[in-house]
Structures are given as C-alpha cells and as structure tokens.
Length: 228
Image 1 (cartoon, helix red, strand yellow):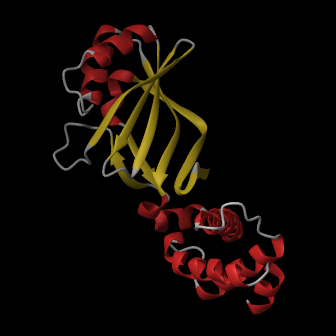
Image 2: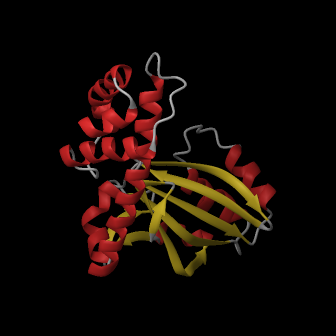
C-alpha cells in the first residue's frame, strides 16, 4: 500500500485485480491483516456497516462506482463492465434514495438483472489509517514499516515548515518578511524538541510562533537565530 493524498489515508493497490459477476456482489468481503473481515458488501446483513455510494465516472467501456463505508473509514471503487456505462449511470442516478444507501441493491437487483453478464472489478481500497493501524502493522515488514514512518515524518516536517512560514507571515507587520532558511531551521528545531511531530496539531504551535513573531519585531533574523 501507500499513502493516498495525505497521511490519514492508506491506499492498497491490488496486485491481481479481482473480478466477479455483478450479481454476486453481495458475496464479496474486504479483509485486512491476513484475512480479518473489515466490511461486507452484503447490504442485507443486519449488523453491516452503514455506507453510501454513487456513480463516479466513465472510463472507456467501464462505469466507476464509489462506495464509502461509514463513519468514513473505507472507500472502494467498483469498475462495472459488460454493460453500457451510460445505462449504469442512468439506473444509479435514477435511484430515489439520494444518500446512496441503496447503491448495492441498485447494482445487484437493477443493473445486474438488466445486464446478467455484467462483471465488477476491484482495483484498490482506501482506508482511514487510524482505523486499521494494527492491521497495517501486520501487513508491513519491519523494514517497510520503518520506511513508511520515515516517509510520513518527512511529509509532516515539510508541512510544518510551510505552516511556520505561512503563520509568521500572517501576523501584522510581517506580511512582507522573507524568513531565512537558518531562522526557519532554528524555529523548527525548537518545535520538534518540544513536540512529537507525528502526533502534533500544528495549531498548538501558534502561541510559540506568535512569540517568535514578536521577537522579529525587536531583533534582526541573525540575532533571533542566536537567541533560539
């Protein structure tokens, strides 16, 4: 897998794309961590996770359907083939249930009934990483887990650097200031010593950044770096 858009989302690309008849969609399950069942696509189960979905896009002769399992812990895209995408779109969008909770019923009972040879293909799944942290650890080798943590921390540090520059520049009188690389590095060092980069909410740094900003009003950047 890999991070998808941000560190909170983990995208698993299936090495072998899995295909089944659309009429059998309710028999499909999504498992993580060596087979642990995470969600079921059987909308008739009494204890199933709630979900919503709808038509995403047309890609050649393929109709793409996005389904989100609530509360926003997993997203899966279904690729429907063997039937005209415009027909699938019309059937799905004609559903009276605007929140998309009938999407599986619509695909199995409406689309698959009308197009019995239609198939569904699974290409990738996107998880909310915090919901499957234990499973992710089992999926990754120790070496890859260390690499993933390093990559995530590097992204967080880059994001924090942007936050520092943007926040200090937002204070009155600092609009035109151009912070030196040395000063930014020194500010980052102070923040990273005081806080865990992985768990920090950047907004918690604002009181400190306000103090740094005040320091810049009375000192040049070289002096501010020596003080830090």
